[in-house]
Length: 114
Length: 110
Image (tube, rainbow over all chains, first blue to last red):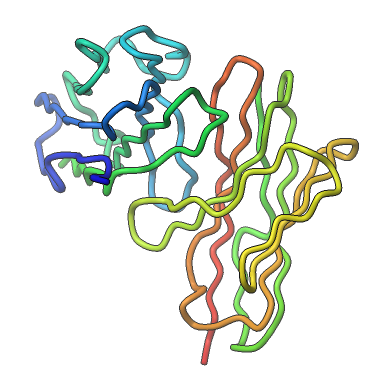
């Protein structure tokens, strides 16, 4: 079974630039999550989708972050404009049927904003 | 606001030692608690606990949940250097959110 795919693996940008991350969940998984993990901290939920609807985006900084999940499959997370404090690993995860089923994580994208 | 607190934040032990990692939580309409191991980037699933007092076991790892006192422990016996990782505790709320704690960084020295 193919896992959760994310790209790119690494990205370095200057502050005020924009960046986009892509995630392809495991086939058939209805729930997709984007987490931000700053060094030394646990993953922080940015947005959670159930199919192509948003379950929770309460911690997504909506003035600069946006995410979409077209057709309930792939998802993109965008930051525009980036700030220094956005430097982190962005993890995508998916689960079969909601948060009460095991979530599988991708390898993440390490973003460095300089 | 849903909250998951793990302790200790870091732990250094010698091979062969037994360790206990703690996770306490405050969440609206608790559904389940999960433990993950994070070695490099991607956390990998260890256990899901939904009922109090029932131990889940996998090799040298075991975990138990106390829903009355709102905590869980993860035990690792006869630790090995390969157990070195960050162990993450996460809780599923009634709104189906998956919320993580900050993790416990375990270092096992030979």
